[in-house]
Length: 91
Image (cartoon, rainbow, N blue to C red; front, top):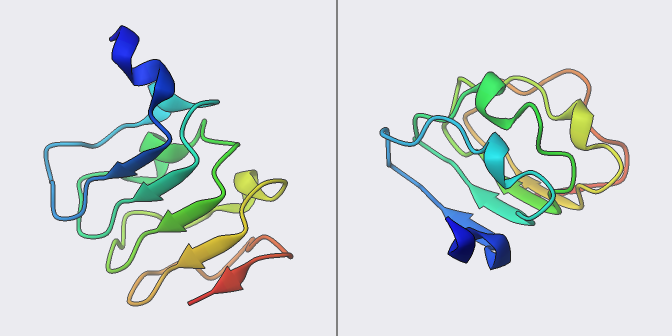
């Protein structure tokens, strides 16, 4: 797992086998988890993400814990409604 220490961007779109990426906390900067197996618990420790794409992922409900770092978010067809970070661009 040494090679994961330099992983900055993870694309797991449509991969239902990946459900938790908390072990990448402090490393990962961008996450594409649309239509994946990743749920709220699976991102609960990610506090340094700059971009998250959770398009069509109804298992993610809150990204408020990323308030200090999140800059961009794609959340179309998701159920994120509460606790949105204040300074982000949604697209």
